[in-house]
Length: 258
Length: 319
Ligand SMILES: Nc1ncnc2c1ncn2[C@@H]1O[C@H](COP(=O)(O)OP(=O)(O)OP(=O)(O)O)[C@@H](O)[C@H]1O
Ligand SMILES: [Mg+2]
Image (tube, rainbow over all chains, first blue to last red):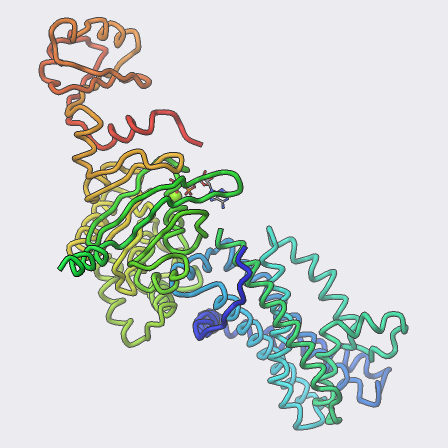
């Protein structure tokens, strides 16, 4: 097994560009989903629940929820892309096989895919921010800083998703990952309520989950509060991304270079 | 003097494999094969299903680690130089892996971008390739709208996008109709004339005979024979073949004639199903010695590469 350290070269941008070109063909339905889904969430939960809740952790509930949804949808988008789309290109479509007959390496392919997943996260995160600000949920211009942060969140969740793709024998496998990993994070990591209100026994576990750190980065920027422990949160996100990138490269090499 | 001569020969060897071996677990699928492909040559890699052809190609491309032995491509060892070598190689894979998310032109453009080629230099080249392979009027068709023959032509066109020195073709014409096949043969001959080196695998012996300067026949991962098609025919089979086809009772009667004992030409018989193959130097005389039987049809023909292939690899079914 080739466990050599991957090298990220400029060819990863070519892979990224390939995916952009495909995305551009379906830009309308794709953007509709990007805007439509958060709109539903914010309208339904933000206003519906918000009517009863009013404030949460000192923020209007719509603001609290919108900042959580920005982070969680970055997670969802990157996870979805890193599993269903990457698997499709890797296995049934044999797209990677065709790339590997050119000067492109597995290192480039995985880096390009992660960049692309993160780009898609950024698109969806930006769409949500736009919807949220139209609904009056964005309280500060510092929310613009969320855009690069969402890119990093996308990278963080793209890596593990691609690792899953590299292992998977079929699409069915991804349901487990969503049910066992993505959904619990969505529920536990502070999207809907502060993690501090969870039972103390759960806190350490929740604190090692990346979505917790993603939410903690995004929320102050959306609400205009001073962010805390930025270095730690970024380090956790980038750490997940880097380790998962390395694992994904090794596993995809093992799968494709037989 | 001799040094520069050495350099010249070294340069003209495009692929050199020595004791090249590939194992999957305990199964050895390529067993210590040696061969070299010279520049400007069309080199054939023939063998039954599962012989190890695709595996050998994958090692040449650096898509499969080498278990043992050495492999040099363009004079550099593999797989360390795989990325460098692949810049100069065009690949036609055995299985279709066109990008279904793109049209015909986009497939060529995107594939070209993997080589770092820019839009400006690509556009002219793409137009030439589309013309070369009669695909111009399908330029904006989606891949799934193409017939099998068009897909295959597009894959070959795609393999030429980087103007490669070496073109590796893994069964380029499998499943194609005679028109497309002849067209592809003509294109491959043109490529060879323009100085390209070709490495070709095929199950069509006629194709190998028409295109290959040199070929190796491999089976169970081992090289069983090598040489030019004409050499192999000379070496492994008699020059002519008389085929007798009919119900087995009639064939039995025909064979009872024993032409050799009757002073006829030396002859080697092989019976497969409803056909007897008589390999000989002189089918004319031989044919006269067999009585005419209404149930038995006959065919006299020169020996070909298929006879060599079946003689060498045997007639048992594979896989
Ligand atoms: N990844 C793999 N793991 C295990 N065995 C493999 C693998 N790939 C190929 N093989 C085996 O190696 C042998 C050679 O396969 P290969 O694909 O090289 O044959 P081939 O000569 O190209 O055959 P065909 O004419 O059918 O394409 C076969 O027995 C095949 O089952
Ligand atoms: Mg094969």
